[in-house]
Image 1: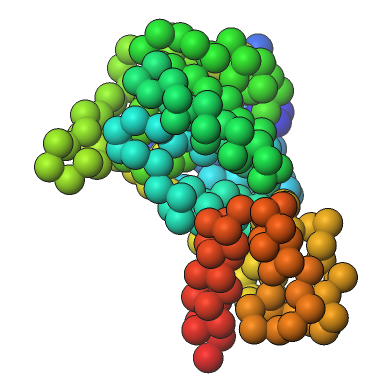
Image 2 (image 1 turned 180 degrees about the vertical axis):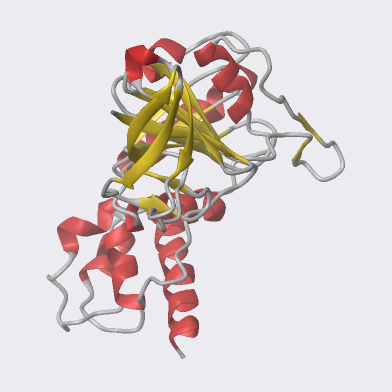
Length: 285
């Protein structure tokens, strides 16, 4: 039988095998591969709802934070209200997703608290080339559209604490046992939120993953020259600069800098690129 690991507890792996339900499994001694939530396993039944893990099937990808395998998409949750959307933080997480070859979907939660800024951020990030949804865990606005994007996929929900990831998942899954965090008035961050990554089955072949707090897919291994490819709006201009390679920093006749000057690329996005480029350059030393 083939199934997907939903959780791991004290050496027991709980595996979703479809219509047969959730099975409790132990690994066979010959299986040395570290098993992650999200892994697809080959198992042999030994009893009703129990099995032995024979093999960890090949992964299509693997994230380190959260430690989860075989992810199809990432929904990055931010808010135009409290805590206020931070451009650098948002751009870093979006770029991190792209680095893992996962096209991010941006969710603007708590949209009812600031409709004007919700509209502004939606237009801004759509112009940057991202899929954006305005949603509300409180009113239910936009939940139907987001739910439709989940079908047949493993979706990670990520973002800083306090933006309402768990509240959104409670709406989507109908589960009331998810930990809902409040936002500290003093530090404008979430508190008492999710502590561990958890895979939640919704329906056949459809899963969501709640992650603990802000969970950026690491850019630590990204080379400076790779950063330009992580900004979708840069792509039409790449390879058209006077110099090749071009860092799009001090070089003359740079098409990226010209696009910024002509307001075809937002300056704030270019500044995020510069910050990530310099960070990658420092790591390379």
